[in-house]
Structure formats: structure tokens, C-alpha cells
Image 1 (cartoon, helix red, strand yellow):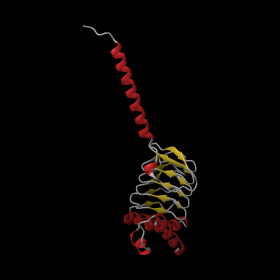
Image 2 (image 1 turned 30 degrees about the horizontal axis):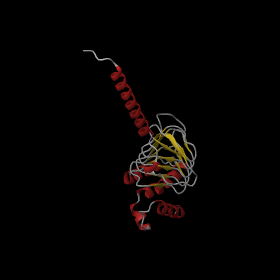
Image 3 (image 1 turned 120 degrees about the horizontal axis):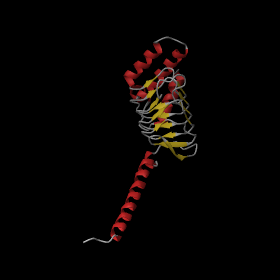
Image 4 (image 1 turned 180 degrees about the horizontal axis):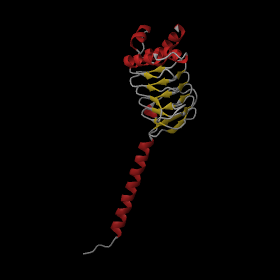
Length: 216
């Protein structure tokens, strides 16, 4: 467990430039607390210990604002930045080196049974407020933009934005930055295209009206 804690601290130093000291991380990082408590709860869950894993999960939720079901499988070097409002469902599987921001939901789409929550590959980044729903796979090195709602599988090395989520970019394996300021805006582009079409129709209407003979 001490090795896991050390690795978790190193991950936070790597991912968050605001982290200044080990003591600060130990005392002030809810994502750190939630990850460690989940690993304890998950071990008990896998050992078929009744009730206690859920109790630990709810205690973690109370103190951190992060809800991770003890059945969720979480890989190494997992980091939840800020964390408030994060929900991770029971059958979620998360790979290594995954970064999640606040208000993210890795959830289901209804009352279905079995594998009903998403699987995230390695080196995935999920932006603020994104919802990844259903038993879908998010590929390795994928980037999910802030506020996206993803209900279909996402290929490796791709960036997804919008509602519903759509792939807007393919990138290299080593690209790790989720730069929202540089992301395409599919909805904005569609609105701009509609405005241009409306403007063209107005011009055509003016031309037609000016060609009509005037009645006195």
C-alpha cells in the first residue's frame, strides 16, 4: 500500500503544477483520498466482504464529493483533479495513467444488467463535466472534451467533443494535453453555416423582390 501511495503522490506532482508538497497532497487533495480509499474498498469487495466496501465508498463520498463504486476496476497512476461531483459506476474499468476532471460521470444508461458502465483505455483524459455512458470502450490515448456526452465507442488516439459526442480529431500517441481553447466546435460550425445559408437566402429574396414589377 505504501508503494501505491507513493506512486499516487508522484502522479499528482506530474499532473498538477499547483501541488507544492507531499503534506499538501496528503491533506488537501480529495482525488488522492478518494483513490486510496477506493483501492481499500475494492480489495474488500473482491474478497466478498459484505457491506463494508460500500460503507467505505460512502464515507469517501461524504468527505471528498467523489463517488466510486467499490466494484469499479481502476488502473495505476489514476488522478482525479479537483474531483467534486465525479461518479464512477460499478462495472467501470479504467486503464493506467487516466486523468479525470470534476463533475465527470462514468455511468450507465438505464437498468440494464451485466457490463453497463464504460471501459477506459490507458492514457485517457476526460474533461470537466463530461458524461461517458453505457458499456462502451474509450480507446487508448483518447481525449473527451468538457461537457461532452459520449454514448458510442471512441477509437484510440482521438478527441471527442459535443452532445452527442463526435470524433473531431485524431492525434499522436504522445499528445497528452486537452486544450479546450484549440478544440473544434461542431455546434458552432453548424450554426455559422446556417447563418451563411440564411444570409444567402435573404440576398436571393431581395433580388427576386427587386425584379418584380411594382403595382400602382
